[in-house]
Image (cartoon, rainbow, N blue to C red; front, side, top):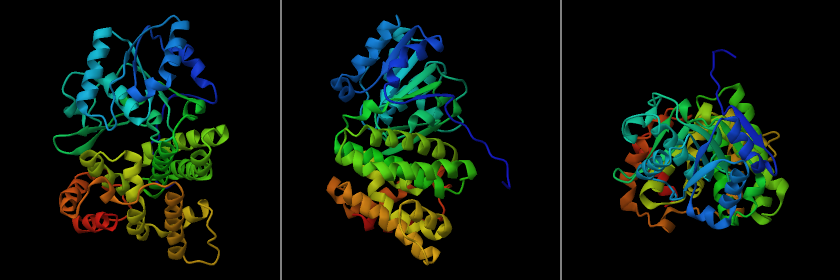
Amino acid sequence: MSASLTFQTTGRIVMGPGALAKIGEEARRLGAKRILVVTDPGLVKTGIVDTLENLLTKAKLHFSRFADVEADPSYETAVKASLSVKAFKADAIIGIGGGSAQDVAKVASILATNTGEVSSYFGIDMVPRPGLQLILVPTTAGTGSEVTPIAILSDHHEKLKKGIVSPHLFPATAILDPELTLGLPPQVTAATGMDALIHAVEAYTSRNANSLTDLLALQAVRLVHGAIRTAFANGANLQARSDMLEGSLLAGMAFANAGVTAVHAFAYPIGAEFHIPHGVANSIMLIPVMEFNMLGNLPKFAVLAEVLGENTAGLSQRDAAIKAVAALRTLSGDLQVSAKLSAFGVRDEHIPDLAKGVMKVTRLLANNPRVLKLEDAEAIYRQVL
């Protein structure tokens, strides 16, 4: 280790089949008495939110529900959630759902204790004070939001996704119960699972990677890559679901500290303007960005090929790195993830503005293993048009 490093993550993690049953106990441990449950309408329909709230009732905790979180949530939604916090006089928040619900819960928690507009918190370390006590419960194996200090919101005016990055966004507790993911449809399993895998790949190849994040990222790749096809094809397989959720967790820990790179920078503009689901947007951009990036760190891309199960014996680092790209292309095909932007209405005339949007995501491009120029961004988008 040639330089000092900083590593941070969620302070308490409760994980395993049936872990949701501990929600009341964990809330009481934090001293919570009045809890706002932040979620989305789709999850409400599954009955999972009712199950959680029944557990809170048994623990004799008061609660209210904010269930208006949409996919790719706007900062206006986070403000509405924060108003619900204040109206109910909540002293704690539970965010349950995918990354969108968790991110809205995070932002609502800091808006409850800080003054100022949401826009003043976009960027790194812009949040002055800690938020309310926060428990996050992921119901997809994808974002890793339960162990990251990041919340992503859509700015529909600028057609961009923007990030708030602050240690005050770490929840007090994360509860990971793979049984909550058993009902995920194959397409959601594929998109969210690819998101988790991409988190791990990008954390491993980030310029800010270190020995700790490398360990987490590579194990995340092993777990997710080893389980995602089974989870996609047989969603009731609890072991595959458990491995996926653990892999997503480890990937989240890795990229929370090492950062993600250009795949996400490319995904943000197309997600914000064309409402492409985040995991799908990442999956579409993965292959061309990896092909561009691999020259920036051939040794690591060669290692990825081995971890992805490719036989690299006797190959040069470049040839091994190419095998890593090929393995992920095959995986995307097996999972039937869309590979073309045109399927979502993107046309060639959109590309110059989208590429300019990529170049604005400087927080992520700073981590990229290869310097990216505007003309590179346009060419990469055109590869998957």
